[in-house]
Image (cartoon, rainbow, N blue to C red; front, side, top):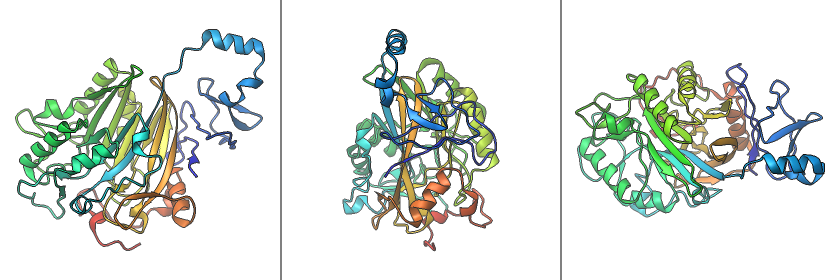
Length: 392
């Protein structure tokens, strides 16, 4: 069963200005006492419970119904599904589609987005670091066939096979019409918002950047590379402001944090606040290779890390993931649902509805992350433990 998540700032100790809730079907849940409902949300409190206003439309007095009819604008409902890190270096050569078990299916959303943690190329020389990832050109067709519309290229593996590998990656993604924010032939292209226009007229802009930047990966005015959220934060924020000025919704994908840490650190929280101030409506994080909490501030949803969405087989915490479903009415975020999944024997996400791993997923995403945080001395610059042997 998908879980309705109360959006709060449980880990940070700060209170959002508004709370957004999504209640599936006619389920009623108890609201957190410290988060009063905003009059502008689609759900309201009634005697200590959250009730779905739309589900009770028939109970509203006729006068109120008449007033609502004359003042409410037509809804332009749409959804976005987001997953975390995607690596197809093993499944693609075997002809395996790791996304076939995702529920809801990625193609069911108006937009589906993931972080592409590899190059798509069969050329180039490997970068001089411990872990380098790539998949053959057919991987682009697998992504498109799964219903993925957008992939973030701003991460520490996009240039694993050099500039020629990046060129191939961009080329095949463009061929299958997948938007690819976060990298380009120079910094103007790498930081540029990529825009998708939906059938309902909503314009959604995507900005992607990485705070994990191996030497030589950052784009410059004369060099291809990725958008740098560590050394050029001002440029990232300028891109978000530009995206917000000409579009309805701004989605920011950011590679940040510390590997295997289930709680976001202060640098993540600081950058999230800056991105929100610049105009972000949705922030999608990755790099820790484990899940981290999902929070909100005002009507911006922040998923600090969505974990390994399609990866090498994992049977512990690095194999626990999920699909984040965000609901919009036009330019307005109405709420979200998080659908828990675990990786199968091929490293593909499969739904999970009960058990210890399910409970851990719920704990972390709802903000109870400290009890699952490993006691490790890990920094962003150390080796990628998600590619090391799984220990639990």
